[in-house]
Length: 292
Image 1 (cartoon, helix red, strand yellow):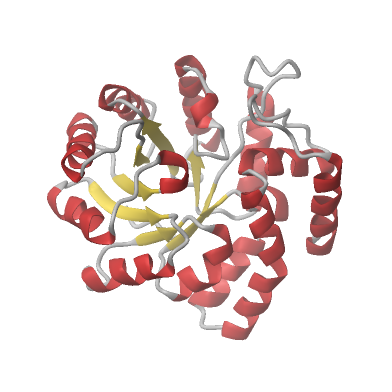
Image 2: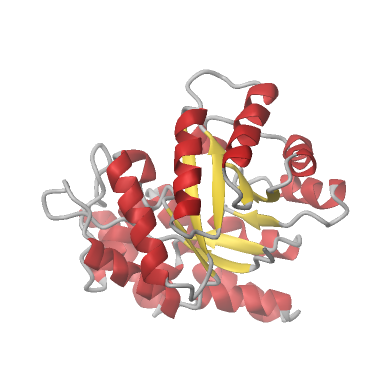
């Protein structure tokens, strides 16, 4: 799959009592991303509170997302599980429901060795034919994979074909590019590094931002690809404070609060996560007004 551009992340809307998923609202959240001209939808990431869903809820969100997107753009399903068996279970399900790709993260309680991480990816790859995006996000998963190790998995695992790098270290992206002679696509998962990452050759940017600020991330991506450097820099700095804020405040809480401020109730994040407080909401409102 030749994937490039903006990969949009939907939040998972809950009912008022926080006990059920509101699929009608999920559909509206997905529609907002599609209207923002994203190039793919990535369900069940950290913005989607995947770690806080039961298996039944996880399956419900995955199935509904594929059905609702209906082939308009590729659908990527995020998988970050403690056990290889559950990751296999989810990867097989993603294939059965018609997803286009999985974004696979190793998730750890015990510190994992490279041999254990490789075995995890290789086992999942053997269980599902879907292309795999190797996802390095030590802040949430507790596992930090080096560029050389991730590239070795791309070389040795046939369906592992691209990398999402979210450490916030631009040197990791330079390493991926140079060690692979520019042949392995990599994606930026760190919002406030978007300008640097795309200029470093990233194939795309994985972000929940389009759910609140429309096609501004897509405009930034297009400006860089078209060599309009001054325009790209202006677009990035216009968004920078907002991008930094939604990460530092927690993606699910920030995006859900932002949607509510814009008249779309997506419920609160699931406890122990908390919604933004009044001061944070006022700050977010000011940034959204400035980006409108």
